[in-house]
Length: 275
Image 1 (tube, one colour):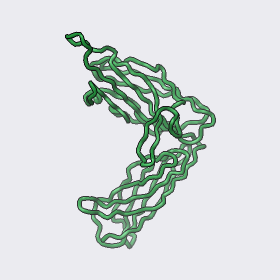
Image 2 (cartoon, one colour; image 1 turned 45 degrees about the vertical axis):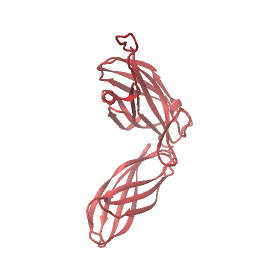
Image 3 (cartoon, rainbow, N blue to C red; image 1 turned 90 degrees about the horizontal axis):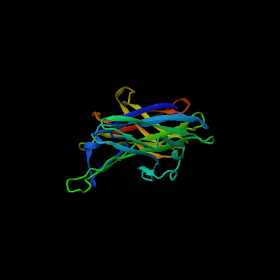
């Protein structure tokens, strides 16, 4: 499995810690999951292994149970987490953990292995969220003999898979728009992007602003944004410097990786006037 990116952060994609029904953020800073984000190329019919390391920086002995959930988006382009095999392009049924339950001692870490079995007919992009749900192995007892407060923690990552060579890519820039600055707001640029691909595209880029004579008067970076298959959403970025009144053209260059292929590049010219 070829990993294009792997990140570590102490709070995974989803990390919820409850103590007596209340959030306790001190525990969230003591627990870690690595890698928390995986973007990998795969081949249909192959089996892969991936290790996850759970770090416990607390003074509590924790028992973690491993599971998965589906990952997709809704009509508002908001992230949606669902039960396994209930959302489109689910890879949840492909993943099996060994062990499915593990104890992590205080101030230590433990490794869980995931076996990922890709069906022979898999084509395109597939997604799942690995969850690691933990709780203390021992419930504290108060002086009056009653059980003390305890907590549960849920850490989650994101696993994004795309089949090599068989994933089809078709990312379209449908239109562009410049939003003039107003008050404290910078000038904004927007591209209407439709990902007709069978796999996800992590789109990033650069832009240059040319005056009416073709001279570059500024440039900037476009931060990466993830588009899942068939996702249609705006890509927004800003220009913070001032422009003299006149006619300009923003030349925008976008790139994204393709599983098993060379990266793709899109160029879009967006003329506008500064008043």
